[in-house]
Structures are given as C-alpha cells and as structure tokens.
Length: 413
Image 1: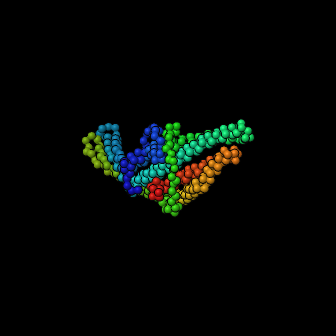
Image 2 (image 1 turned 90 degrees about the horizontal axis):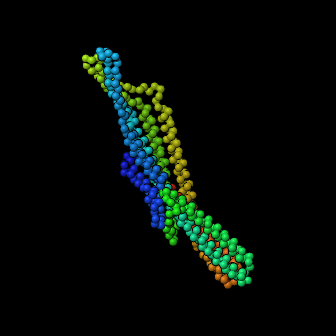
Image 3 (image 1 turned 45 degrees about the vertical axis):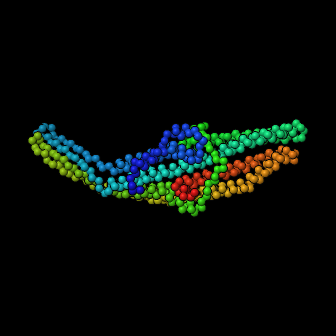
C-alpha cells in the first residue's frame, strides 16, 4: 500500500461507531439485514478497529516529521572583559533514507490496520448472520415445544375420559401424564435456548435481548453451496491472506528502516561567538558525525530480517489453515443441505403421515395411546432435526463468508 491513508478512510472506519443506544432502541421486528446493519454500526470491537485505523493517520504524519533543530547557548568566564559567549544552532540531517523508510513502515502499519478493520467487519457480519439464524431456529423450536405440550395435554385429557369410561387402562393415563411433564420440561429448555440465542445476537451491538423481536420468514431460504474449487480460488483475496501479506510487507519495511539506521546522521553546527564586550562576532561552523566503530545496528538488522522470515512462514501457515477451514466449512454446508433435503422429502412426510394415522386410529380405538405419543415424539424429533440442519447450514455459510470476506462471497451467490 503506497498511497497515504486519507482522513476520509479514517472517517469511514469510524462510521461504524454510531452510538449503541440507537441500536438498543430498535423497536421494529428485526430482519436479517437489519441485524447485520446494527452489528456493523455499533459493535464495540469494530469501533476499536476503526479507531486504530484513525490512529494510524497520526502515526503516518509523525513518521514524516523532520528532526527538530537544537539551540545551544554557552557562556564562559566571569568578568565582562574575559567573557566568551557562543550561540549555535545544531541541525540534524538524516542520511541513508531513514525518513523515507520510516514513512513506508508507517504506511504498511496503516495498511495492516485497514485490512484488520475489513476482516473484523466480515467477522461481525458473519457472526450476526449466524446468530440471527440461531434465533430463528430457537424460536421455531420453542414454538414446536409449546405445541407439543398442548398435544400432550389433549392426549392426557382424552386418556382421562377413556379411563373414566372404562375403555383404557389407568396405566395409559399415567404414561400420558409423564409424557406431558416431559413435554413441559422440553418447552422450558427450548425457552432457555431461545433466551441464550437472543442474548448472543443482541451482544453483537450491545443491545438488550429482552427488547429483541425477530422477524422470522415463513420459509427461510437455504444458503447456496458453490463448488469448493471455486471457493478456494477466492481464498487468496480474503482479508486474512491479505493481512498476512501486509504483515510481510510491514516487516520488510521495518528491515529497510533498520538498514537505513546503519548510516550515521550528520549534525551541522552553525552559530556565532563573541569574546569580550567590544569584539566582533565570529562565525562558528561545525560538523558532528558519530563514528560507527562499536554499534553498526547489525543486531537490529538481523532481528528485522529474521522477523521477515517469520512473517513469510506465518503467511504460508495462514494459507494452509484457511484452506483447511474453508474445506471443513464447505463440507459442513453440503452435509447440512443434504440432510435438509433428506428430512424434508422423506422423513418429515412419513412422520406426519404416521402422526395423523396414529391420531385417527386412536380415535377409532385401533391404536393405543402409547402409539399416539410415539408418533408425536417422532414427528417432533424430525422437525427438530430439520431445524438443526437448517441452522447448521447457515452457520457453515457464515463461516465461509468470514473466511472469504464479504466481497468474495458476493461473487458466489
């Protein structure tokens, strides 16, 4: 990155720092887009990354500053006739390209901060999407758990009437009561899970989970799955890989700076001297040059070069890690989508037919109550499996978006 970070970039970086109070005051039911927008505008970690980008403006300006001259006044002797007064201005002149190397190192540091901000935005966006879909799934689980409680209550009431009529064993009524208690416990657990999912989502922008209302679509679309090779081809442009390359560039710039520091700076001395009250001023010219006899900055240069090697090794390791994580996320996504297809086309229709048949048979006296309870339990488990698969597909898609970056994901709709 050879262009100076402009104040506009810093302002854009800080634009994510709107007051979190406005986010917490959101009253309308949240859509996915609104949740992501709130997180991008008010996430504290994102604001901190934006502040770091803004701080690099000052670091870059300081890196280009010239050394200050030094004014020195010296008076020798006590009497006015023998007094010698010397005034000099010491001007340091940097040699070896130190200033240019220092500015380039600051530019590289600013590039690192800008890429880190972009990566953090992608992470917050992915976290918000995953958390939103977790809340949607938790809401649906909680709704189904309440429906199961109602079904168990109706089954218990029907069993009680049959026991009174003498057509059903009291043991079956006890089983129905136990099933209702289990359904109520599952409903309580589903409520706790929903509350936890709401808290995790609201925490992304510092909001109040108690005021959170989610607009859940009736039929949430499943995320698409692009071919793995197509995703791997985008990985080199991901924020993480760009950050790793920028770290190498920054370390190389610091190594050039340490090499430049091996060249001694020259200190030019310009001034005037007066001896006694009636003597004319005499010009004073001088030159001060450190002699690099014992310290040639060799240790710092070696340290900087080894850190360049370390940054390159870390870049290679980052590429390996990202490829592995991307492959794992893609495998999770494809497996979750396959599970969704299997459950929706084969398992759920069969479970729904079995539940309807069990209810009808129980009403006609052909099936026992335990058959109805089992059919209801299997149907509830099938729906939960489908919800879990849908939520997992969205989590995997969010992980892919986090790894590749928002811009790369938009190329793979």
